[in-house]
Image 1 (spheres, helix red, strand yellow):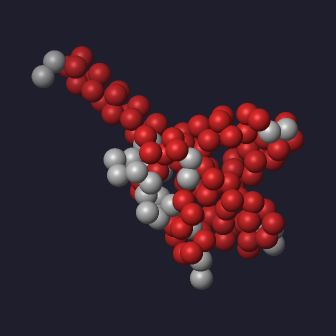
Image 2 (image 1 turned 135 degrees about the vertical axis):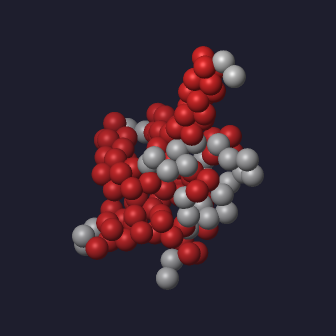
Image 3 (image 1 turned 90 degrees about the horizontal axis):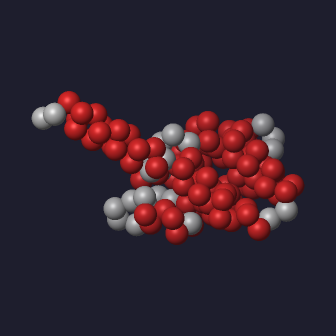
Length: 123
């Protein structure tokens, strides 16, 4: 196979992987959902996701993230005594994972471990 063709295919595969990351899907949700919100709301939601969520699951492929992983992220916030912030982070996670753009990122639609099923996984 032609080396330039191999490079092109590898680049295309890297782009597909990055566009299927949670961070990419969340950014798409931010762009669509938060565009109509007040600047303070945008700043708070973005800051919360940047501080508490994206460092832990942002780079992961959306189809591979499980509900227990998401709960681990939320529990980290709870252990700092920030119950309201944990609740708000979970709500943002639910909204981002229930966004229709997610359908374009997976072969089978919404991963069964994400979306509105997150809270039912809590113990």
